[in-house]
Length: 244
Ligand code: MN
Image (cartoon, rainbow, N blue to C red):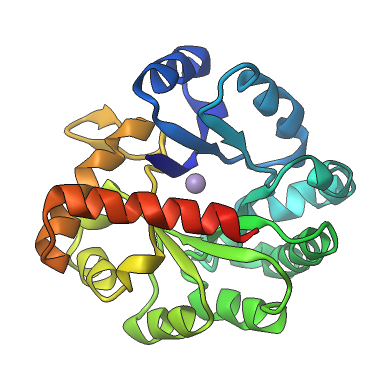
């Protein structure tokens, strides 16, 4: 089991969380929001086999942190994983749109030049714009994982055609729209995530092993036994990691 999108460095006590994840054999893709957070965040994972760290620059920070792209390029050779990156079209982030586009494009090209990365992508209120960018750089050796996808059915169809993967978490299943999107995803492109510590279930912050909460839904929706759902997600994890 791998939580494909956790902000480990933003938990109150990351060390305690990592120790428990190691005991539970719960895999973590530890995403970051700025290149300057890379060194400290990868150090957290030192000695723990369950953690992989991703190099990121969050679209909501694109304007204030775009000068850190040089730092992104310096570190990109140190990991197979990039994230959290992408575009955010929410009203409060629209004013940084051109910075967001520059930063996202730079990161995709840099990842491509570094041999191709597995990239966790934010596309809130920007699914079409993200897909337009990905279409331009699709033959790039990068693997794209759309995190918490919340676009339209039409945009979902386009993402599937483009070969994107989807990381899906308990928070996404709390609304009818999210459940309906997941039900239309090909099972063999689904990965799991929590987006902790920004998500909760029953008033508790979601931790990496809480991806387990998604299996009953997958089982009901795709008509497979819970154990079979778990096996298939395990195979998806292997497939996406092997791809790059
Ligand atoms: Mn996130």
